[in-house]
Image 1 (cartoon, rainbow, N blue to C red):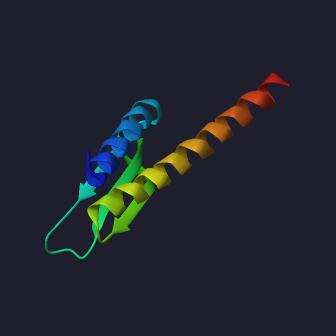
Image 2 (image 1 turned 90 degrees about the vertical axis):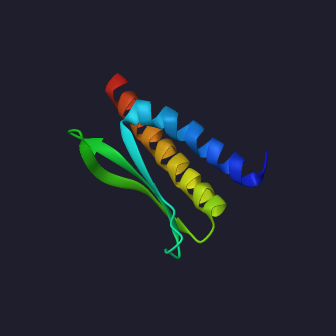
Length: 92
């Protein structure tokens, strides 16, 4: 499997788990006329897009997926830390 396919597969693997757990949607824009490839991930609020949590823009598709994956993993880590801290505070 080439690097491009690995990046796409890894992003979707992590995204699909987070989508179910945190209620996310994403939009991917790749265009011949645009200078940049764009991947955005949004939190859903009341069935509509709320806060944008990933906004990856790169000239190369593979690099765009890598950046989006990094931003998504960062979001998940911070979200889990906040949930853990909240649960620990409630237990005291």
